[in-house]
Amino acid sequence: MEFYGGLGTANQFTMRGTSQYIAPVLSWQVGNAVFKVSPTFGLTDASYRAMLRFGAQYEISGFRRKLEKLFH
Image (cartoon, rainbow, N blue to C red; front, side, top):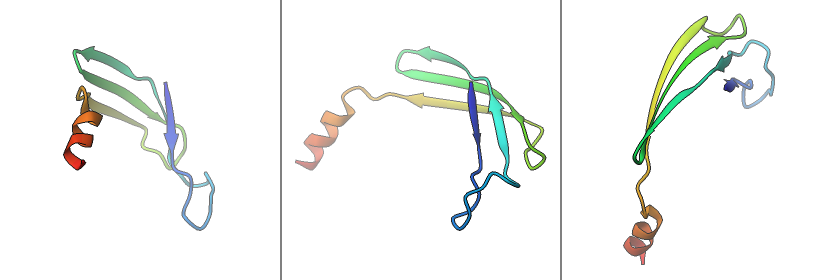
């Protein structure tokens, strides 16, 4: 479960007039890849009523070691 939204502006930290959301997340891991789908629901008048978010990520094994070799 994710909760997310706006926190105002750089000059004023406030939740008034910002979009706030709640989103259950379903994810599947296939090898080094993770796929996510998340039906998202608005909690405030400034929010969209509903959205559908998709995501994908891939983990590169040994990435840190590869970067260290590249920059040393």
